[in-house]
Amino acid sequence: LIRLEKSILNHTVKDVLILGVLAAMACLTKYLGVALVFSYLIGLFFLKADLRQKLINAVIFSAVSLTPLLFWMWRNYLVSGTLAGRRTGSAASLLKNFLLSIDSISIWFMTLRISPSIRVPVVGTIILLIVIWYFRKNWGKLKGENIPSILWVNGVFIAVYMAYLLAVSSIVAFDKIDQRFTVHIYIPLLVSLVFVLDRILQNTVITSKTTTRVGLFLVTFWILYLGQYTISDIKHCLRDGAGGYSHIFWRNSKFTAYLEQNLISGKIYSNFPDGVYILTGQSAFMSPRKHFHLDPSELTDDVKVLESELEQVDAVYLAWFARQGRSFLFTPEELMLFFDLKETKVLHEGVLYKLSNLDSTDTP
Image (cartoon, rainbow, N blue to C red):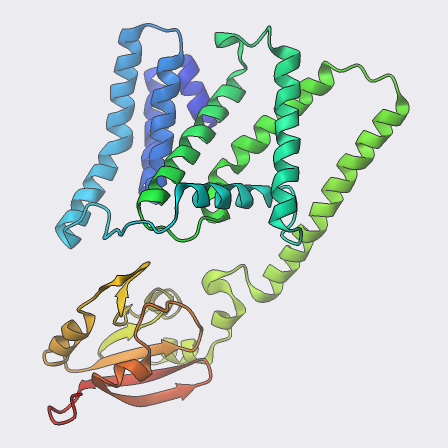
């Protein structure tokens, strides 16, 4: 965002190229990174500058930032026949996604222990009052390019990103919107609020010591109030891991240790194939799915594909972790209706099965 502000204000090719590279990496990290591209283009054409220079910068930036993404989408098409993977329609309405987004943002200012019915209105009201107070005090100064760049650059990015997130999540099936999706506006929102509060304090004459003391007390209380939960989270992460495959379940898993110490001579399927690869170094594939992720109405042909594969591959294994999740996959018990599953290693954290096709007389 610092580079975005600099590129829009300076108009130099060097700044545009650097921003283009950063935006390209954002797009390859997440498709939502495209919001950064839109933010630059929108911000660029709102400025009073030479139209020819703005067009040149827009073309250069778009070419640099979007070309890697276009190549990646071409690769997706060659591999899967789709530009961005198979996507199903969203079951969540625009209003529901909006409320989920607001709720996840409110957690940054008040904790989860407070009900959303209280947390969201309180946080929303405080932010709204701060913004109204600032613009009321500075309305005569805030015209065109007199608006502080830190505000309008951050504002454009927040507006574009949230509009893009809400639009896409209301059309395409997403995981439930939470802080994983909204965290990208945390820094620009926080910086903008701190800037506005600083300007308010600069333009406000406080003659009462009592008012000053009350203000300092409230700010200190708020910092300490949120800080205790931050400290608690840090302790929890140090003890149990920060989540994902650093969690204590995976670090202390005897099943994972067994897979790491014993090279499996065959093809491995698993309900956590990414975990198998990250923690053991052995390649694994997603075990058969009942239906596509987030779309129970669309069944897969994974069972038939695996039946065909068992006739061609010497050994196929299923590394099934006891950890819950991914309900769209067939469980081992359900797979026994289609395949012969022989237990080769049984541990508390998981079971390693060797798969083979059922005899024709045993096929249900």
